Image (cartoon, rainbow, N blue to C red; front, side, top):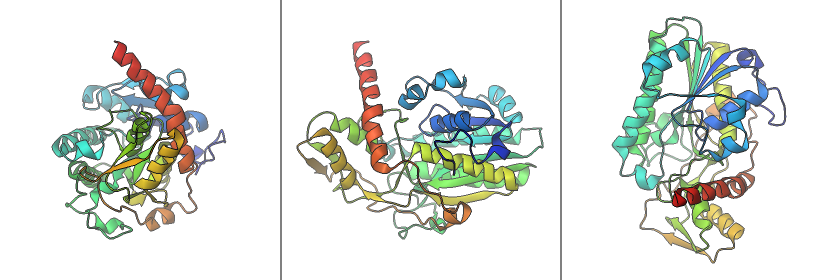
Length: 353
């Protein structure tokens, strides 16, 4: 994996001089994919998103609006997307629609439809491509493809139509993505997919969706800033494995490079940090940082699996020696120090408008 302090990355043979498309470029993971490409490779990058850079705290701190133009299009607009994919050497498809479990549990169809539409739009552009030169496409699936009853740590073989309780719609969309990649490879000459099943992402590039709709870490940080006892959904014993968006971006680049180099599909394999943490541990860190009076555990709210840890043998065999570059506590502090002030200022501006 790349050294984040270096100006050159280890995949220069793939990315230097390559035409690279990043979907979901202004999102949580896409922001760092674009930043890493700009920092380390001499690639011709087409950053695509329906959202602008504005509204993304990390995009502002990384000055991406000055370093990389953003092509604002709807991925379902084939007239605009097809020429972009036609010219590509590598597509890094990280666009997706996600929400916290409180909304996900009651919006399964909406999430299934939104993610399937995004994924099939991009793969449709690949299918319509007349250029038969090798095209590698790296995509992110999810650990939500696994049933709640899966053994711990979860092996790749446990994927099932019975997706994770509370995230069934999102999980099924990711199963559809994986199967679509496999079927498309059989139809399109030169197409080489790579896909990994991600545990949990976090980072200062997160676009806040409000306290009730956001994912665990941004919701806890936001609530921590209110100065009251920290409200936590569940009893705090839930185990989760979080990876900072910057490290996920490194893995996206690695998967795209591996597929392009070998000409052979990569994955699906699990990807996580390998160091699960309890929700209680995360909450206690937030309480200590904000000096809160304590934690209020609300077991009436949905909190997902008690444990969700992934078997990483497949990933470790593919990329031996990988380790996260962002320490979890340091990444959590970046959420508090970089992400929170930005979101608070944005919220105040909205309230004044």
